[in-house]
Image (tube, rainbow, N blue to C red; front, side, top):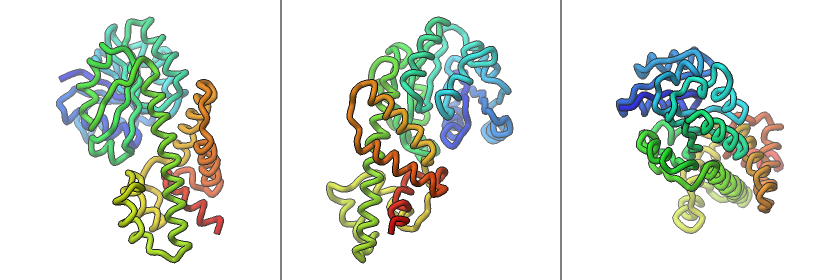
Length: 290
């Protein structure tokens, strides 16, 4: 059993922190909205704290899953931040999808304080978090990763170190780039089937068993056909991630024409009022076009 802190109790962090308790760890949570932290503690039997610094007191591992670069900085830095309260040698594991720039900044800040920092973004959506079936892609020093991996296993179906600091975040960018094209392709296929007078469910039953099959097809086609878009990762968050991807592409001189195009399609969905719809809502844009 380890003493842990978990910072950020959104749709992903809330169940992830719960899995740590189920594995027998001593968990203290922090959330910007204290009521959610209090509710989590009542449900899972852990403790909650009013600041990140208070939450991490005495912790061997600190896990974070917040919203963006600024949110991550706010829970790490400052007089009430996690870094101010962590003991030397403790491991900070960041599950947030953020830029490689902020990862490098916080990795360096942690090292100066005698702390370990592992960037460990996740994939698998809300269902993966709830079922403990996330894919976790990690970057950081090998000794820190080896300490953290058994803890991460509480909610992971796969956890792998890809390389040094920042490698986890760069891998998550690859994940989001791949998803963007897949969702647009699936949306176009279902839209085409509808326009051609075909039964979308019958079409997917056949094509999903061949080369066109994907996780997106298996898990999202029915809700897309039923025009339901509250089942996963929100468009607002996807645009945040794709913005990170496109900025990084400029830095490494990679060409991402499809990603850039799909990012603009998601911008159209936001203009339709769909910022909180899940990413499969790209099909609504096609339907709106006629």
